[in-house]
Length: 145
Image (cartoon, rainbow, N blue to C red):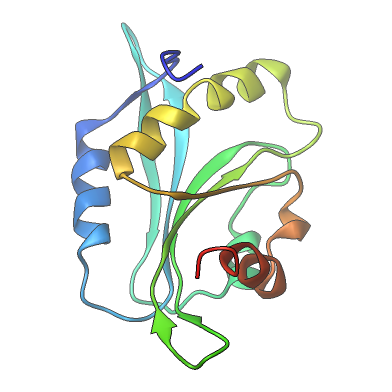
């Protein structure tokens, strides 16, 4: 449900996402976030940034744990079939098979809040880090002409 919020977004992460959205660089870059329970409330904790390392989807998948969920905001240089170039911001929910059910629920119940906070429309999910490839991402983005 859209109203379910398990974790709130850390204001520091909100600001980093805003700056990331308006960055001038044209290389691939990513922010990886994880949910970390803090008392009295739970927050998304800013985990990593790759700027401006031109990180490929294959390199990005190496940064994701195989048995723990993560949220990735990925700025990707996408070359369209007609030669146009765009730089879509993609939200990738890495929700690997085999992670703890409580983690799975915490992330699934928090995904919409982070997507809304980051104002993203290209939202994808992977169930294994092996799915995150250049071909997979280009196929997903081909639906957004």
